[in-house]
Length: 224
Image (cartoon, rainbow, N blue to C red):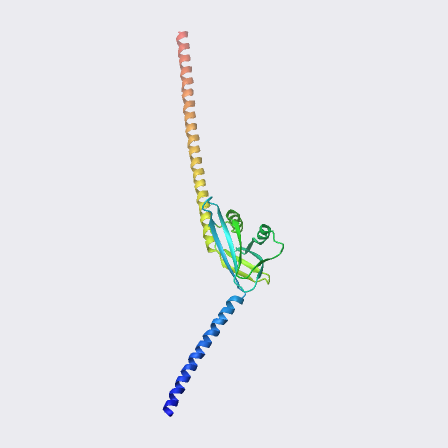
């Protein structure tokens, strides 16, 4: 009898351990689920580079997804670079003619987007880059109504901007080299023209000298 009782106790302990493990795992998953959907970092930000296949128009895009169960009110979004904020929130309000002057609402499980002119953003970044020909640390950001800021690296856009900056730098160097070549060619041309002018002057001078000599000889013959 004691042997059967011991076997049942061992089985009961094993079942209890399995139940405790399952309950702990469920609590862990629930906590992770709640933490993911109710944490302050509730936005998923995509900073993209797009090109239209028809007209080859290039642009940047910010996609901002609200991962929270509740609607989210945002008061700013754009890019951060070199301790400077490049905010496109007012452009979004103007484009969508929203009645909310200071904020925009992203519904739960929904998103908003804004297309940004490629050259416009590059010009602004060049203004803040202190003459550097390569950028580092470009981030996309969103600010909600509570002032909480969510930031992500804008790697894809950084790559495109660095590629264009390099192309512009290469073109500028080639332009300078071409200007230097033209300057050297003009200098050689002026030196050649100067040498030709000097040879012409020497030739004319010799011709005048020979003429004087002939006149002198003619006078001497005449005097004789």
